[in-house]
Image (cartoon, rainbow, N blue to C red):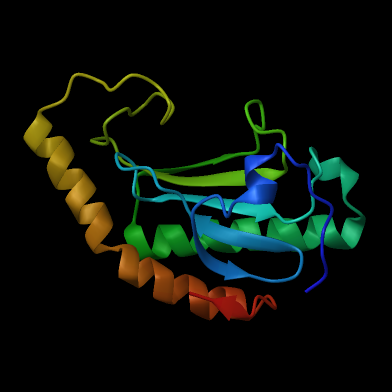
Amino acid sequence: MSNPPVMVDCPLCNGSGGEVLARDDRLRVVLADEPQHPAFLRVIWNAHVAETCELVAADRDHLMRVVFEVERGLRDAMRPDKINLASLGNVVPHLHWHVIGRWRDDPTFPASVWSAPAARDPALVAARIARSREALPTLRALLRERLSGLGLDEFR
């Protein structure tokens, strides 16, 4: 793997951004450590760039193929009611896409995952989180299978 440009104070240059599920020399797919939202993934560009438009066409195409395959894998493995895709970077201006499985009974639905929790029965919320966590091994296996077809070759 090449050594991509890094920024000293960037948490995505200096840390993994979550549990690394797959990677190649351009990007990595991670499972974020979001206790209330277990189906929260990130596709993180390895080099420090802020915007997708900073990439050459082949890199943009690769990034988006991976994002869409992660979305498909999440849908097939976990069957969320909705998937949120976002490339925000307001807090961490390092190119990364959020791929987040959402359910009507998740703690913050229909608001963003960063919103205050909605008024929900705590037992129902705990059950939703537990069901999501139980599906993570299936998600990991499915992403490994599908992402290997896109050239990602380092899996955990």
